[in-house]
Image 1: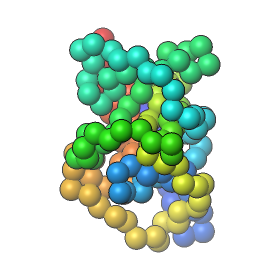
Image 2 (image 1 turned 120 degrees about the horizontal axis):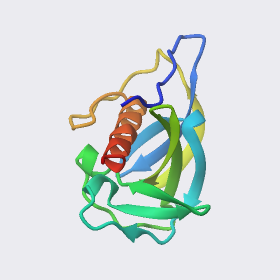
Image 3 (image 1 turned 180 degrees about the vertical axis):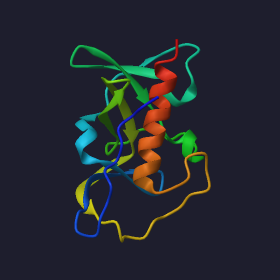
Image 4 (image 1 turned 90 degrees about the horizontal axis):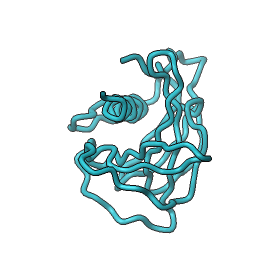
Length: 148
């Protein structure tokens, strides 16, 4: 399944990202795929859904799957706090835009990452650079939501 590809990084061309926290970790998403950052809102659980995207939200009249990436990164479930947010991203799925919400314990800032910056690795199902990992997990959640 095709999904949004992160552009090539060069030392001269950084990548603008939104950083957010999940557990004690900091992750990043390419800022260009972020559509909106929402306060927590009521969610509707979907019986029988995969735990990664087990609920949906009403986003401007559209039903949007809500993914909790904690399980994909080997983290335990966590109650929402006053800092918790939903990051709505848009991915390309077979040429069509697809919205998905990602839960975050906190949203930090928009910043620029450069290709020469050190990479942090995690030993989990979504191992790799934080930007790539979050995008990969978002795409993985999208594929589960789109299964027929």
